[in-house]
Length: 480
Image (cartoon, rainbow, N blue to C red):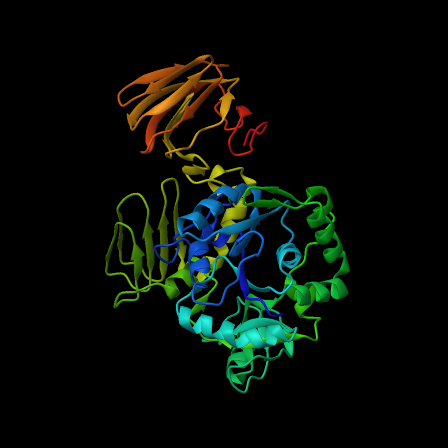
């Protein structure tokens, strides 16, 4: 392996333990959970000082693996930090081994000398320089055909992480002795006291060919399904689509179970860089700036006589008195209040919401689309009110509805409206009406965002009441 490092970002998680901020259609890696940038953006940016390479024939400097429903958000966020990324769209979630295999097959096909730095999109690393130094320490081992993983130097007897057993004599890569499942409390304390156990970070560095050779030998079914799906892949701008019918035959397995635990080429580099997988609100509290009483808060939050608590306010004032070890998370449509020690159980709450068919599991009140966003301001019997924001240069699909009419009032900017055979401008304080069955479209060919208040009326107001006749984003014929 003589080429540079290609960052591969895995962005397929749903982040259920960080509900209500994280939703399945807009999960934690797409949110600014622990800083000004989203977690995806922060992951990409921390590779800036590394000797990264690009895919030679395309010029892409990052690979991102995500699902179809997140593709436009991922693309927009990577463009927002000026990091060109090729985005592989998993037809179905199959865990980390197939996701990494898709990236390795694409990279090897374009540049066989490239090394992959595999990183989940939803981790926090406070000491970026220490992270970069650890990656550089692993490069030589990767050049020798080793599969490098990064073991986090533990700071507590953590029961929520798997462990790696290794015996480093310094900071260089050393052979992995064992991968260990999540322990109970007493066992975790023994691991911490022993000094030879490290948290499993889920980050890796290896040559694409070396990984694929091990995958072929140790998990041939995964290798075969991924290879066939990538041989028959299709391209759509920045997006790569593996053949869905062939990928569907791929078993679901993690890279640890499928490859790393069985490989004789696995080595570990210790990493002490302020790492957290931010797997819960309690974990986010631990990595957040705190006041003298141990409180962390963001947004319009006011706290009095509180200790060791976390308050996040998104859309209104949240005032708290006398809280101890408590989590309060407010969004536009939901509020979570939880005992900090039981933050892992938020996932159980989400399971109940999902079983009840609640939309709060999937979507925020403000929903992002490739053309902009809409915010459901109010809903009642037979009506719904939304605020649409259409970005400059963006255009909604040409569509029609079978059950609802729509009234539009422009409150900021101006739009170009298509309604059946008409085309006209809609300016501030002007309105128009779209009847049931009218073919219509909103476009913004101008330099400023346009804001439109939409009032829907009808007996059925579901988002699936839409027929797309034409779409700039490849969604023709869909109703989601």
